[in-house]
Image 1 (cartoon, rainbow, N blue to C red):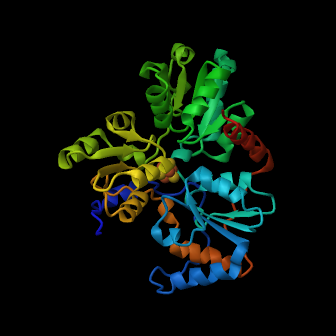
Image 2 (cartoon, protein in one colour):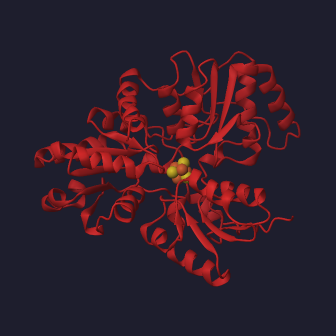
Image 3 (cartoon, rainbow, N blue to C red):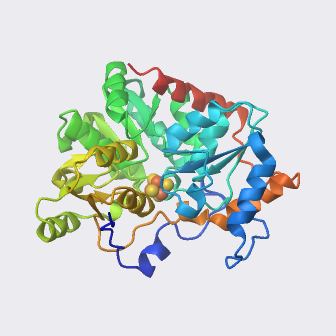
Length: 389
Ligand code: SF4
């Protein structure tokens, strides 16, 4: 059967704005130092195949769902960020973990793997704009203000997996927990058993959507802490009364879907099912028919009946791959224009070839290392997540 997939129209402005530039002081890292093969090299696939074969079991390649197909074809396993970190931890014999994803994911893999294993990010500029929105110094400033107000003993910090190792370490140090988009409700249920407030980092939308749509909170129970304003732009009274203190962070990719995208697709495709990721804005999630993590989206489309129509609000590489895998279903992108995660997209076949060939030559490039103290504290918060009831 032929796929019904229609490519969204290209938007250079979108690609320019999402994940633009690099900041050496941020989670995102710095530019790749290597001599990359030319993009026109017709032998890139053969070179990657040969280098990977030469390395054999010494290398384990992880591919996040949002990676390009040209990279995914060389992944030993694909998954979301947490599944990939777990997979890395389950391969203690692999000397090199090549993480085709973004910086915070490689950090999590380094935290969970053995000290002798090296975790490698093929392009150090592959960061995450959401993770970059919560910088440790800003978060500590906020916490000091909460201390001045005398409310820290009521607050449990919760950070989404999509955060730097520093932030996970802060959360572990302050008796909090890491969550993923699959277990956010369980993490919040546990947190509200430990305290009466949650400080949710860095994705305001996942925090708000989970609290309001899954736990029955009012929007008024949530306040938005803006790190660029004094005291987060909030009064003492607002902070004292809030149940959810949401960090002002968001995903630049999922934040692009709007309520108009939902209206437009419903008019264009009668009976369409709108399926979105919880990193989307609250009004978009409310207007959708289904909401769930990347793994949920994959399973929902696998199980969907033949002939059904789906408009999917998540990263474009994944939606295209799912549409091509299910030609009997009408799977489309929720927006009319392209919406890649441009930092994920930095890892292309050239970077993978360069990385693998460097390893074959006995050089280990782009190693991601988390210092021991931070790794220990971050592991406390990750272990707490694994112990969630
Ligand atoms: S899709 Fe969003 S949250 Fe995921 S890596 Fe890209 S910017 Fe970060």
